[in-house]
Amino acid sequence: MIIKPRISSFREVLLLAWPVILSNLSVPLLGAVDTAVIGHLPNPAFLGAVAIGAMIFSFLYWGFGFLRMGTTGFISQASGAGDVDEVRSVVARALILGCIAATAILLFHSPIILIATQLIETTDTIKAGATEYFNYRIWGAPAALANYCLLGIFIGLGNTRAALITQVFMNAMNIILDLVFVLGLDMDVAGVALATAISEYLAVAVGGFLVWRELTKLGGKWCKDEILSLSKMRQLLSVNRDIFIRTVVLIFAFAYFTASAAKQGEETLAAVAVAMNFMHFMSFGLDGFAHAAESMVGKAIGARQADRLNEVVSASTVLAVAVSVLYAAIYWLFGESIVNTLTSIEPVREIAYSYLPWLTVMPLFAVWSFQFDGIFVGAMRAKEMRNGMLISFGIYFICIQFLQEKWGADGLWISMIIFMIARGVTLAAVYPRVKKLVLT
Image (cartoon, rainbow, N blue to C red; front, side, top):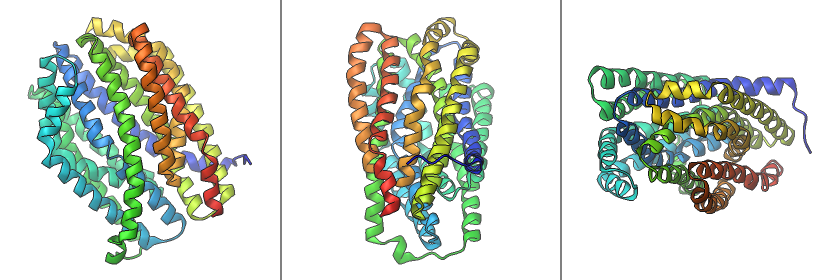
């Protein structure tokens, strides 16, 4: 049964979503500044090196996105059930898992970059630049994964303003350090990477303080036996394993997109790097409503409130669709101006202009995949998310083989749109399983 949302539900979603949207939008804004700072240097290879280096970190860090999503799901349901001690235990388990993951990354960082650069078909100049970027930024791994946990805690508790403060602080510091290292100290690619690593550690200090203050207000106590409970750890690892697989496949889809573009030359790769900023602006904006859905859906399930679940899903989806229309309008009206802001290299601009029709319609097709992701994270239905992503990637991979050969870069963008549609459809098909959770 579809529940018509009350005005108060729309208001609640907006109160949760707007800080997340602002904090999320600061992330692609940072990416845009990275692109703009490097894109106005005379050599397009710098831009390609940052694009490849960032893609490698997408595998490493976004692959551990389960630290954010899994934490959000468990905390929102524990909060909805009124179990404050379990909220604290989830915080501790997530941070322990993040520390273990960061240690593994640092131990194996040399073979990671060696394998990554061998797998990517591009020029030696770009590979060298990407390696330099990696070797500077990798030392921020512990802070990067800790920040994932902190963000998951804030969203799970519904304290999105704390998420806003932490993320905006981190990205503001990153932008300032970008300008200092690249333009002031002439460090080019290394400067961009170093700025990111330092800002991540500064954000941990701010976010850690805000989490401590939030837990102090909630009360409860730390329970060592609960934190280290084998059954709870197995449950956490099971959910996070499926989210990890889902996230790695998603990142591989975008990496494969970038790698396919790299085969067409430095200028095409640079144009794709510029165009991907449009995707980032879109995804982080739409994720604001998905994050609101995560918190509200998790709490509704934890409290076993079926009507509440239907209401928050309807309200967050209506608002997300409205924002997707707004994105499409902005890209249609101001697309060329955005490209011009991101790069002054004329051949790169011309190629990027040709991508604007696909970028304009992308939000209208992509909104459903983002929204269902939020719903399923709040419900902790990680297995369905994993299966849906695997099916969607299979469809995408087949499409990209045929469409790229026939239409070149346009075929890549069409394949990406099909991928977004498939993600939404596969999760919509199993959404009734989420509704059953409040009845069990």
